[in-house]
Image (cartoon, rainbow, N blue to C red; front, side, top):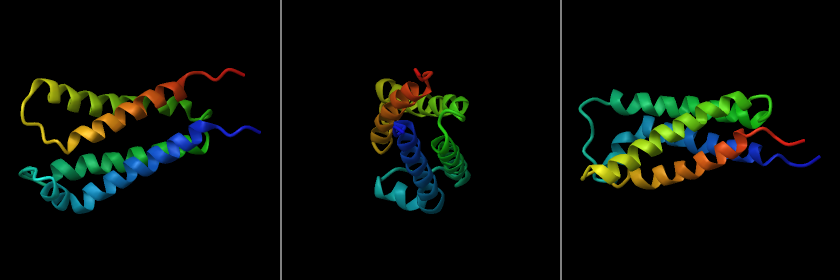
Length: 125
């Protein structure tokens, strides 16, 4: 039986988004300080998106276990990557002063976005 590359993709996505969520939930002040970014006036503005990343990480883990059966969930992953990369890259192009820490992660999400779209396509049998 051939290996399904989509499993590896979504295991990697689960680890990537899950770890980022966990890091930002637990150590967001350290991350902001490291990148010299002014923190928001309330930690909820960071912790809520961090929890969403953890939730998406759990969803990616579910997809990885059975990509064909959970193919419908891939659309939500695509939406996540479009939302994040789209906003960050749009602001990078149109608004001066976006903190540079967000840019590399947006480009990584562009790569995930392309791969998610490929994984979402119906499989040829």
